[in-house]
Image (cartoon, rainbow, N blue to C red; front, side, top):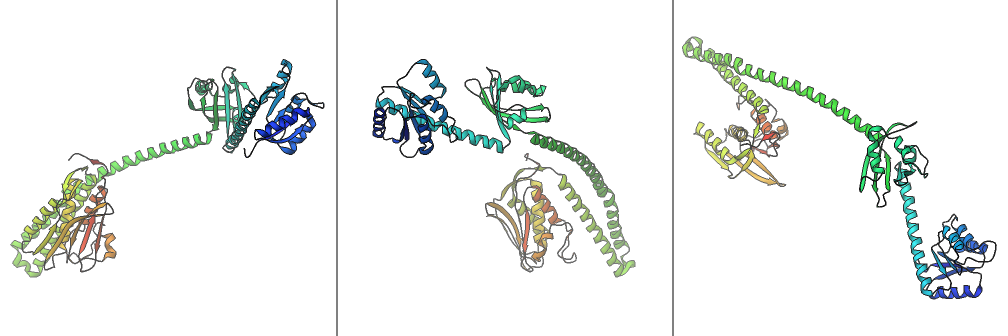
Length: 503
């Protein structure tokens, strides 16, 4: 309330009214006017809109103070708090006054302190009622917007009162007490006990209960009550129609069941395909290797026993046949190795990439002792990964660097790591022939080659194997290069999927 409260005095005795006006002004209130009759009182209330009325019961005119208070309670702009100031205290008068729900009743004579306290309490109570009315109005608007409604149950009286959408959902009149049995009748049998316990206050504190209803003309619906049991045993709750949500959940569950069945079917098909692939791999390993070994062996016998008969040209052809057989054997081994990588479980352990790199380089040097080398390997690069698979990664990357540095006067290879944006990145760098960076994305495709086989031999599967292993470890691998400026292969290691923590 802004500023002093405006108070209307209804008193037909001039001296009493004047004295009352002086006392109110002395207490800091604003006197909105003085009325002597009921009609004058109603007129001043319309024009002045006072915050409170001090009402004498016996006033001039056909209406007494109680009649005026009753009329004020029905004003369209809202009720005005009334305090009775009267010398009459007989039971009949008190009963009539009580029915108008006054904010105070002072018997003359009264002290200024009594008057001031009664006015303050009346004004405070009226403000609280206005706030409560606004909150109830906002709640009703919110429930209406959400197509929800309220429900109040009085277990002692056995009645239920509904408002908003709750009345429509349950099929009863709004704001009218109805027997609890009428409400429970529309609940399906399987849910009735749970709903009864909630409404009867047998669930302490807050509750949320879903149930099915069957109101004539509406069919089967899903409803939900969210409420609480009050201290006096009554229950208050909000009722919401959740039929659409339930239907969506059921449709989603059915879709999930269909999807699960399809996944199981596809899994069985995939398992069968894997079995067939494994059988094919075994066939490749056994049936193809034998004729290839025969071709290679027979070519060597021909070269040894009939070299003179064949002549230089025939010997050259046989040498090419033998080399092709060896290459074919290498391709078969590489393909089988890739297939094995797809099925092999990852067994995590502590792996020192520096130690592995050193062992691989030592083997390469031993195979070509004539090479002049400058190899730099960072120590302490310990990772959590599969030791066997990490050895394959380092072996393929270092052999790749060794191969493409063969034509350099000095073979320079660097193995190290660095932290980029909080992530550890490992790298193998060479200073060999390099390649066109625009084609780097295809480097990891099986059998893709940037250089002719006559220049740099190989199966074309080494980088594909690296990519597959790094990806299975939750990491990524990429290459950076330019023609004549060497190449750098970088990779990261993340969280392996489907790993076994046993070392």
